[in-house]
Image (cartoon, rainbow, N blue to C red; front, side, top):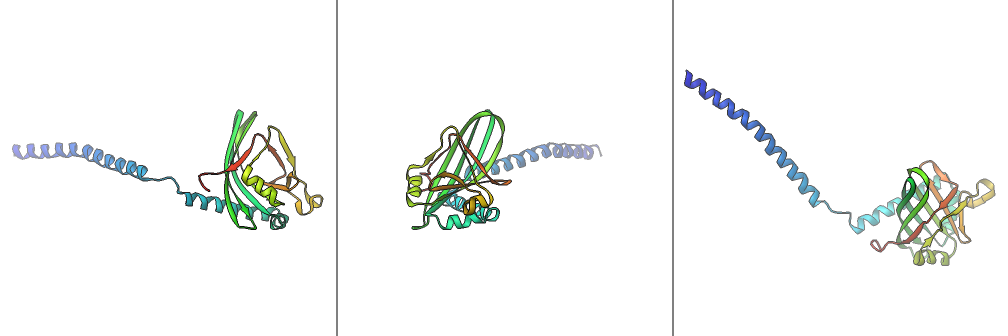
Length: 207
């Protein structure tokens, strides 16, 4: 009887020792799978990134036409247009933002992928997302934007005309004689633009 009890006790001890070991093995196996998955994960391909920008442009145009129907006529009469998506963050005195965009030459249907970057100085804190739609009235303005980019100085400020005052151009900010700009935020169409050190240029990785 004593031997039988000792055997049972030993078996119980073995079980108690096995449980922590089993947990350890399972955890190690799970971590290994997680690390392997992370190692195998790849950055989005060029084609995937291009598709993402195209989808963004399509969605942005649909939003613009919904809040400002007259914009559709402006885009249809243009030599080409550009759509950008930006995310900016500002912490105390300094802020920055980056974004990606797509320019369409309507005559040739050619796509040009572009980037934007901005820097701001001035007290504040917060994050802001916005979308932009550029309409180029002339071929020259379109080509200049694609080939030379665009850069706003430290205090470039402009406001859009609204209502009947602006006609077809209502809601558009006049950036240049041949360039109109629409800016969308989560709240709708923004009728004022402050471009502080904002630069637009070709995206060599996606073209």
